[in-house]
Image 1 (spheres, rainbow, N blue to C red):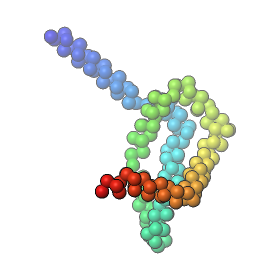
Image 2 (spheres, rainbow, N blue to C red; image 1 turned 30 degrees about the vertical axis):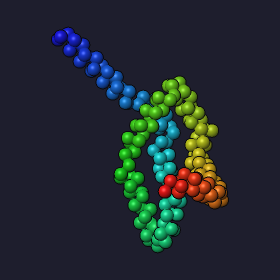
Image 3 (cartoon, helix red, strand yellow; image 1 turned 180 degrees about the vertical axis):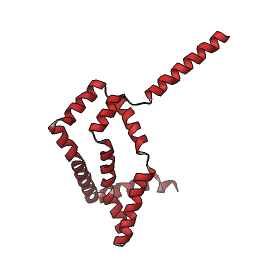
Image 4 (cartoon, rainbow, N blue to C red; image 1 turned 180 degrees about the horizontal axis):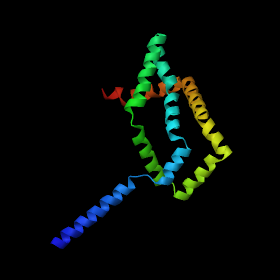
Length: 161
């Protein structure tokens, strides 16, 4: 029985240490995320939310002072309340689960090249432009979605009451 208990404890211990090892991102993925400027990309993503924040402020008819306070509330939330390190850790583990070390090295080599550097420089702007184009197209065709939602509601919700 002692032998079984020792073996079980050893297996559990080995299992836990391999689990803990899996929870730590590889050095290669951390190098890749550094090259990708992940923290800056997160900040850029937050800044891309500003038009939505401004839209809400316009809806509420905030004064310029109130608008700045509303923006600052969001900035403080981003900096002080979000756990960016935990987010980067989770992203890193997902990269580790998705790409091999060789594939990550290929990405590192690309992003360190002049074309990769330009991609890193221009991608946030291009992504924001794409999002704006999607929003504009969505706004132009919003009436179609509303019609479809109304029909769905009538067929599925209103008839059940």
